[in-house]
Length: 451
Image (cartoon, rainbow, N blue to C red; front, side):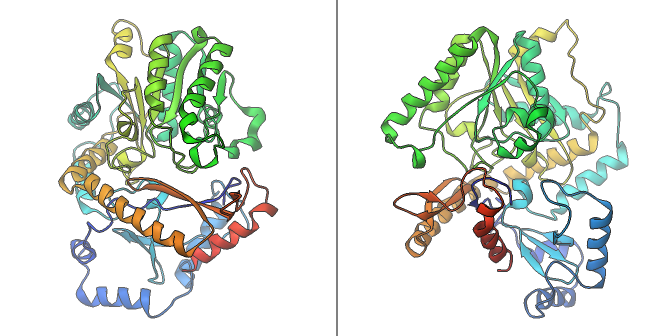
């Protein structure tokens, strides 16, 4: 568990209740007897946790001996050995079934094992698997055109990356190059990635262990959220905008290249923006010639019921960083969508951005098929429908569990904040908690895993 206030996330796969498990198994040519064995082994045999039969144990040990685990100590951990996935479920080598309650890392939006993506990827690989970014492929142009149709305003040009962090890094770089300014403003209690620039622009306490290695010219501002703001919601918007404007005045507006914000808050606790806050930020950016970059890596592609989280707030940014739901984890991929206004600066000037695997044809094919699946299966409508269901169910849970202090949710991007006392709102664990302060949340995590 991360060293910060632990809030229980409920980020579901947005494909929930739209996938028929039997039909998915049939696509994989699994026989009826095999299906029966699968369900019997997962529900009646009660196998060892984590796939720790002989095969699973060997796989786990090879991984422990020869690979490194992110955001984790390297000893004393008990990973699950996953054999395959179907829909919202993962299966280990003992046949035990797990509900993937957070859609992987909030990225497997269409669910696991969709063979339509497999078929699109195989077809592309049979044609061409890789070309240099200086060459073009049909699938690259088709994907760029589709993203331009999806994105609002003049966000018509795509620079394809490898992941969310590389989308953020290139957004920072392009903002500085195109404006000739050097400072990037962002929010405390935000997460944008773990590479140097993305880590520094984040406001996540996980970066503090490498604090001395942060990149320069990043400035953070505080943005309170209603549950922990003591002066009433009526004052929250004004105070938040006033503070941002003061920071801009202190830093010098002519020095600020961009403000970078999440379309909807995710990892930090789904911290809701005050109503009309992003409209206020957009106006400030326009007034000072500052670019507005929206990080849609987590909140994009239907998780909030819209293509992008910022569309819930009625604004259009200058750049959009995306990844996760773009390929739903089927292949590594990301994209930075850029406005025509910014791109026009490079009509006769070299654009100093480049990646060996930019616009990788196979990843482009996966992304294009997944965008099609979103629309064909009406997954965004399903996210809104299931979001309402979750809201109702959590309201019922509040009646039973006094430890639920607050619930914040948009579509299927939501978070339960646990407290020791509803009246005082003392958190179950403080922000940036130490190991001792995390003991109770570690117990909660263990209980959830054993459900």
